[in-house]
Amino acid sequence: MDPKEYERLQEYERLHRYYATLADDELQIAYGHGPSGYRDPVIWELVRALHVQRRLLQDVQDSPIRFSTGSGISLDDPVLITGARHDVEGSAAILCWLIRKYGTMNVDWRLRRQRGWHDGGRQIDIYVIQLRSGEERTCYFDVTESYGKFSS
Image (cartoon, rainbow, N blue to C red):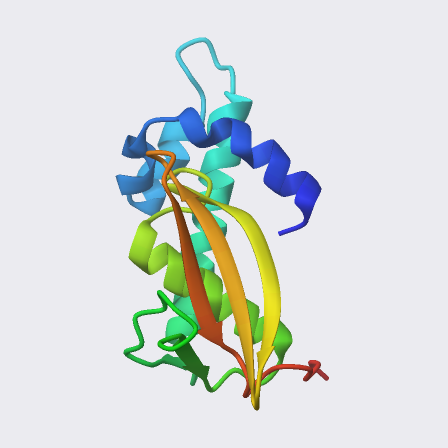
């Protein structure tokens, strides 16, 4: 997600968790048309983000990408991501792991910072997220297998 889109979606964080619990067809109705026929742009953006995240989760689930049982809470115990063929898939896998663990991005948590770290023979991506409660968490991912590879 580009920074401009991320900033725009940040303002929707205040929306109730309810929308994240709806099935896809219910989401269509929820954002659709109110009694006067208007479309709420805030809900529309949230629904679009939820659809994108659900599609991302499904795509990664259907791919050969796998996650280790690492806790991801330190450089000594990062989540090892395997099966990603290039950088973009590795980044998508990280977002999927975060969504599965912490909930809907830009509703339950948001990305504060991301950086890379070269640790000997390993390439570690470090993501700092802020939970809805305001608490920050740092997560570590070993993306050595896909690092520096580009899709063809």
